[in-house]
Image (cartoon, rainbow, N blue to C red):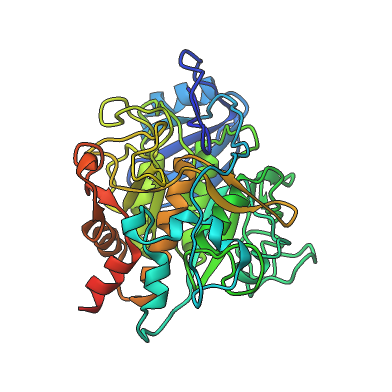
Length: 431
C-alpha cells in the first residue's frame, strides 16, 4: 500500500510496496445482537459506535481465525497503514500576486494569496465575497483538521482555535468525562497512555497540518501574516497523520468520531492511500457521522496525475453522499499537473498550486498539492455554512458543486465541471 503523500507532491513512488498492517489491532463489525467474545488473545475492546469495535490483540491472525470460526462478525478488517512517505516541502513562490486588496483585509501577506482572487483571475472570489457581502447573520463553524497536528501558538492561528470548554488545561484530569485527558484543542491518536487512550497534545512537529489550518481560517484583519477563507471559524486540531505519512484506519475512524461528537460540521482530510483491501469501516464512519451529527468530510483527490474513477484511492474513491472530493488548480486556470481527477469520484476543483499559508514557528510558506486544494474548499464551505447555518451536509455539498465557476477543460475531469466560487455560492443562496 502507498500513502498519497499528505500534500503536494504526494507523488507516489511505492507502486509495488506491500500492504503493512498493525500487528496489534483489528476492526470488527459484529452481527446484530452479538458481542465481542472474551478471549485471552484480546487485550482491549474499544467501542466506536453501533456494532463497530477496535480490538487490541496479541495475535492478529489467531483472533481473526477464531472470530471467523465463531461466525460472530459482519466483517473483520486489519488495521492497514501506508508505506512511509516524505511530506510536503516548501515551494518557491511562482504565482502572481494580488495587486489590490484595499478595504478587504489588512493582513500584509494577503497579496501572496492568489487563491483569494476573483474567479476571472482563477481564484475562488473570496475578496469579492467580502467586499460585496450583505448583512447575513454569522454562526461559528467548527472545522476539524485531521492531519499532522496544529501549531496552537502560531500568531495567526491561536485566536481561531477550537477550545473544549469542559476541559481544564494541563491538569491531567478528564474534566468533561469524554474519555480523553486535557483534550483542550483536539486529540493526538499517535500518542497514547498505557490504557491506549489518545492524548490531548496536538502540537504539529511537521508543518503540514498548520499549513492546512491557515488556509481554512487564519485570523482575518489582525495585521499579521495572511487571511483564512472562513471569517467565523474554529479549528479543531487532530494529530492522526505521522510526519512520515503512514496513518492507520483505526486512528482515522477515532478522529472522525471525536470531531463530529465535539461539534465539527466539516472535517478536512488531506491524506489518502491507493489500496483499501476491501475495508468499509472508514466509509461507514463517514456515513455514521453524517447521519448522527450532520458532518461533511472534505478530502484531497491525491497527486498521482491519474483518473481515480479507474485507479481508486481512499478515502477519495468512497461513494458516500457526504464526502466532497477536491482536485487542484493553478493560478493560470488549469488543473495542476500532479492532480488526480475523475468525473465520478472527484467533485470539485480548487486552487492548490503554490498556496501561501501558515507553518510552525510563526512562519509562512507556499506548498502545492490537492492537500492545499481540499482546505480551500473546506474554508469556502465553512464560510457558506456560517452565513447559511440551516444547510445540511449534503445540501452544502450540492451548493458548492452547483455554484462553481465552470471551466471548459474540467468537464471531463471533475463532476461539477468547475472551480469553487465563494461569491457565486453566497449570491445564489441569497436569491
